[in-house]
Amino acid sequence: MMKHAPGLAARAGVRYMLKWEESVLASFRRLWGSCDVVRWYFAGLTLSFFGTSAMYLVAGVWVKSLTGSNALATLALLCVYAPGVLSPWIGRFADTFRKKPLLIWTDLAIVPALAVLFFTDEIWVIFTVLLVYGAKAVLVSAAEPALLVAMLSPDRLAKINGLRMSLQEGMKLVAPLAAAALFAGYGAWPVVAIDALSFLLAAAATSMIKVDEPPPAPRETPSWPHLKALTWPIVGATTALFAASLHTAASFSLVENGLHYGPEFLGVLSAAQGAGSVLAGLAGKRANVTTGLVLIAVAALARTTGWLPAVLAAGFVHGIGLAWAVIAVATLVQQRTPPAVMGRVSATAISIVFGGGPLGLAVGAALVAHLSFEAIYVIIAVLTAAMAFWHARAGRAASLRARPPRETADQME
Image 1 (cartoon, rainbow, N blue to C red):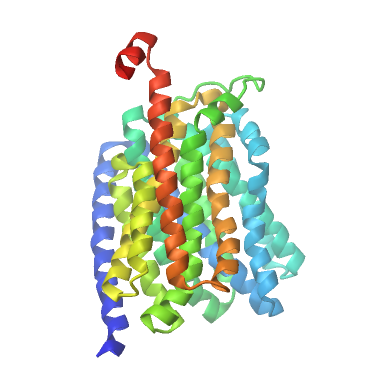
Image 2 (image 1 turned 30 degrees about the horizontal axis):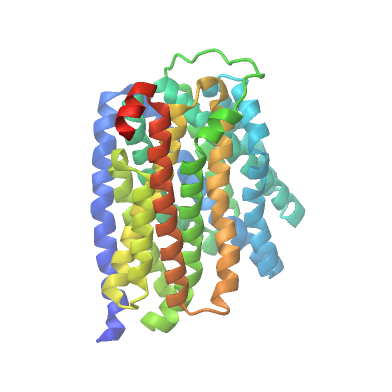
């Protein structure tokens, strides 16, 4: 009977996923009918998310199929993340332009870069295009938050960021499957073509947004004080991404030695986590870094049991915690950063946060060679619980410092 458990769990996961997708679509329909600005923003976002999610999968698979090298396939994915080290400078570049036209031209500029891949499959050319692709992603992470601030009132930012997360996670479940099927049947070129087309259509959708943007501020405006003020949220979210990658590394051992299933069962765990992230996006107003870290710690402890229901529930809870940490940081950056330096602060903050992912994978790869999955999950629980405690204390201290002197003194008494 146990041998049927993966299939039953997979079907249950799909049902839950469809249920949450229906909730996401309902939320989008309400927004679509109420605001032209949000309507076109999400239209462009859907297209670009689909193309990007598909391309991220195919990049590594394509290089692997051409070279047979796992190292080069990993390097291909690294090329996408490498431009993150340039985020302060890319963000400074974004701060000197109005964000709507910058996003339009960024989407259009990537199309000829992708078109080069129709004429050659030289590895160095693929790597170069992926570096450009990664730089484009950093530029978007710098410009898009500032555009949202110009589009929306502050009280709507958390909800929109949450729905954005739901859409992104939903596309991660759909687009890679479509890309894998296309690659298996026809090679990489259809995926490249769809990716290029998605950016053309995204540029067209962005051009339909009506927004009154303030003029760019002088380049001399300092950004470091605003980035420093967000130190603890950034550190907390980075820890969440680091812990998530440790989760991923330990999942292989969990599935083999704890659940006693084949590696294909990892897809079921990914679906459970994706469903949690979709739900977290729908409840974006509740996003909080401390809460996200606590949920990740609880999920890690649940996975030490090696009991299938607990492991699936843990994946769902982990998805909520991880998404809330990211949503909270994105919203705090938008709410606390002046438009003049939004690009620099946003790009740098997001690059630091997501830099925790590759670092976690590297550490996780070393840990799984020497420790059991139970030990790794205990380490994750201790790390995230400690960070949640420190983050909560730092947040309270920052709130006290931000109050007027009389109010602070009364509070301390």
